[in-house]
Amino acid sequence: MTKRITIAIDGPAGAGKSTLARRIAAKLGYVYVDSGAMYRAVALWALRANVALSDMHRLEQLANAAHIEFAPGGGAVLLNDEDVTSAIRTPEVSQAASEVSLVPAVRRALVQKQREIGEQVSIVMEGRDIGTVVFPDATVKIFLDAIPEERATRRANEVALPPEIVERQIRERDQRDRGRAESPLVQAPDAVYVDTTGLGIEEVEAVILKIIRDRTSNGRERTQ
Ligand code: DC
Image 1 (tube, rainbow, N blue to C red):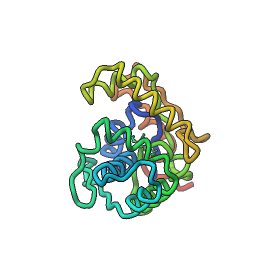
Image 2: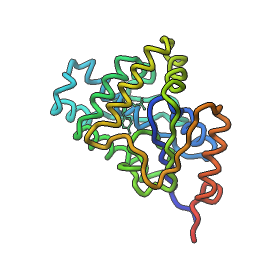
Image 3: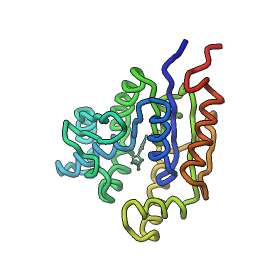
């Protein structure tokens, strides 16, 4: 007998969550869900609509109204049917996403959308609160981490900015993500901590796949 599997991958920016979650989902045939992209999509909409990031009521309305979809294969992100895959990756949107994610009503709206996806199919979902809040009963929980310098170097390569600037941005975002009152970034007690510092993608992937296999049987939940 098989059952829907939920793999939760949480951790700070630049820990490698997206790359790993996408690869693992592809390997196991599950749907990859980037929950950060949902916060980014709401932030993009707010910036475009000139909604102040302090206007909690309007932000809540946008989060509820946002129609966010992930194209199959873990590629494109659609906001209200528009492909916003690259528009949500600018430093401005990163900053705004971190701010809109502080708003409890925005979180409630997006958590509900995230749970709806997980109720239908087996998923690998990555974010900050997946194992703690969104899916406290996830089949497998991973907390992915690396030292800030290395996370900054990885991000700097992606966004073509000097590592010192990216490191400062990452430390600021870490502080906000870890320090917020609502669903702060924290390791779930039953999550497996994986430090990716100094490791390549393949090595981390092998570690995570082993953790998943140890808890499930070939990606299927054990029935006993
Ligand atoms: O993972 P990311 O950098 O794309 O996330 C963008 C922002 O959204 C980040 O500052 C933290 C926030 N976020 C969150 O609060 N909860 C999640 N589950 C995912 C992201």
